Picture 1 (cartoon, one colour):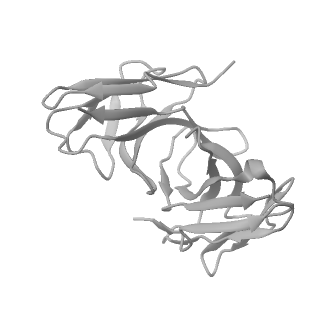
Picture 2 (cartoon, chains in turn orange, red):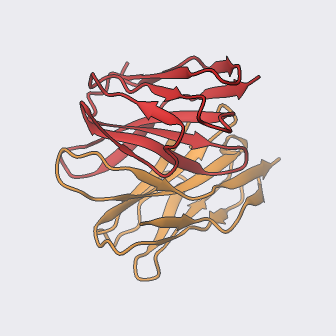
Length: 118
Length: 115
């Protein structure tokens, strides 16, 4: 079974600064996907960024980037130029890669509550 | 617009009653999932279905039941056997696309309260 650990229950950052959220995972799989989801007060889950394990290059989406260390099983999220709208719960998630046309289940970490201060 | 619709947004249940949460998707996804979220905690998997007429238990299936009679629909029934049903419930769907990436789309959730 896979486990995902987020060791920072809460974090805060000043607006316009940079913050890094940590995530580690445990798996015996070699092919998998990693995700960061954002859950604002509306409670809807929003995909922030995803990483395929077979890719060595770290994923980047505008102000969001990851530091993926496969050997260390680490997948941190960096938010640059933090904005007030980034205030939310952030969840790290793991998904095994299975065959084509097969859905897979996400395993989530416990979440990190991020507060962006003006 | 494609997406996932959960209803109702808020639901109240009396103790001892069964209640069904609706989840519908028009994304043509094969897989659908139900997660439970308790305050300040992460999401835990209740049930998932990878294909019509088939579903599997997740980590916390006791006290819940599901059906998958149509590709678009994956309703969750919270039975009286669930001892602590008050929680936020999220439905999700997922699909492998042609370049082998995959992601899950989430509904807006249903908050269930036992009164």
